[in-house]
Length: 173
Image: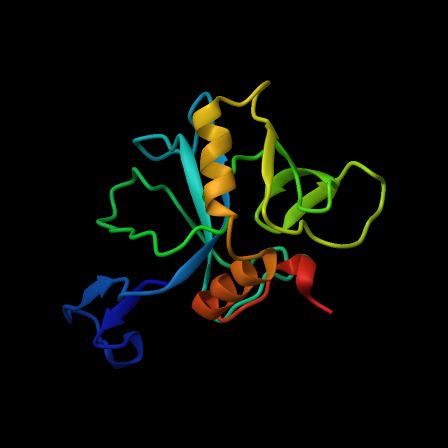
């Protein structure tokens, strides 16, 4: 993701250059947290890494080295602006009932697990929050109901894909 200006192919020993990351749209693949902080030989020791893919790049589970990981509290002057988070009204582990009464566990935006054993489908909106670390508060339940009163899983996927120009790994054929 880092670039030099002028390009490294035009540089000679003793030249000066700028090194940085131009404005780049990425999508977060994972957030890794380390407790205790990771021993890397560099200070400060990272307590987390954010793993990203560039716009237009779809995650390939067969590739070991794909994307870029960075320490959000590291020394690089990186500014991050969140444009969209699918299912921002849910937290991993939430349990919801959909319009058809089907109960689901939400683990991530494209990682849904129905309790009925069926492997197919996606939740039909609106959703009712059944569990969030136990019984949800009325405020939490109302927020999920309000957020899913209109829209659909397909709409979340379409908006995310439009921004990332990619598909989630679970939707690749």
